[in-house]
Image 1 (spheres, rainbow, N blue to C red):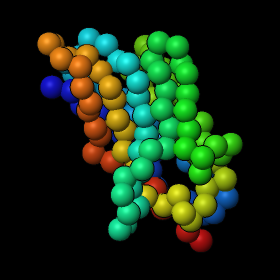
Image 2 (cartoon, rainbow, N blue to C red):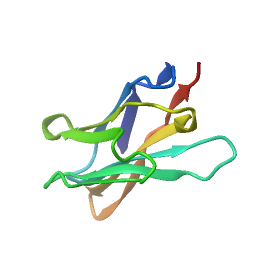
Image 3 (cartoon, one colour):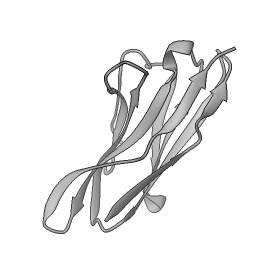
Image 4 (cartoon, rainbow, N blue to C red):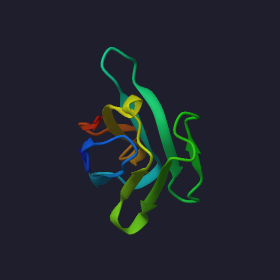
Length: 120
């Protein structure tokens, strides 16, 4: 079994910053990519950012480029999302995703989500 545990969400004013963390643990042999998605009320879940585990290559949604930074700590199997210049439209539940290798198969795992609210 694989667990992804997110932390760091909360309430912040527009223009503020938050840092999300997601730690992966359990029965897997290799991480390929970790990513962040978000889902606002009444909307579909959307991609935010991703990072490859071996090379550290990153990819961002256009809506967060220049404001959000994804990074990783390989030793801790942890991915971070530094969110700066937050806007009300960034309000959503943020989910961590991992593409990883379990015994016998490769597949996705998801965290439980952490709420980010940007409001004055």
